[in-house]
Length: 327
Image (cartoon, rainbow, N blue to C red; front, side, top):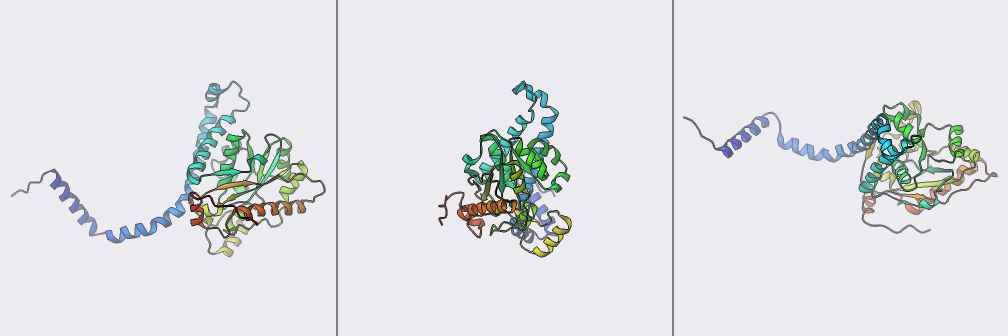
């Protein structure tokens, strides 16, 4: 005797049989519960990879542009001297769009940035310097100027970083090379805290510069002004894990490599603040200049940052523009 099914009956029978078969080997209720419980944790650690992916997408775009630059550039200009300019503008447009959509990114104090001539931008380093990528893009688009940046040497060992550093003018940064960049009337950005500050800073936003005065020597040698920079809620966007800090510090001191895991990618409000320029003073020693710049950045932090930082409050800042703190 045959059982006849219509289309809906057949599919219902098939689905029930399949679920019954899978249920014999897998506890579906427990799997669904486990997936829902772990989803926030998985997303928290996977979101930083989005920004790594964006960096490599930028690298792929630049490789394509370099390969076909003559055809592309003939369509926009007859001058082949600065062929990277078009590529920078395209990459900057992508990063600026992401900054605006994901973080509602803003910059205050842009008037302190010179329209031409040199300036050394000294900034606080977050767990991931995503704010510097956004800032470089915004300056490229609004001021038509390129901000040269100093990066840790380990980055130059990563595949794909070479062409990004070539196009965006990223260098390891000795005192002499940085001084020459400024003497050529360029903008240059340095974070004295570097990877150490990125790895071991927290939502109290303390400067971890140790005794580094290299940036001060650069500014003195080039006779360039220093512009302090700080990005509000930077540590709420990305954070380093809070456990085993002493062990990670020991491991970092041995390897000089960022070993502490970073989590986050929260769409908090980012607002970069530039302070008044600190003009060249031949009477200041590098140590005195370092202290003066540190105080200027700490002043920006005290004015604009909620301490300790709160991820929930930083998310709320996307919708509510809180008043600046007054002394």
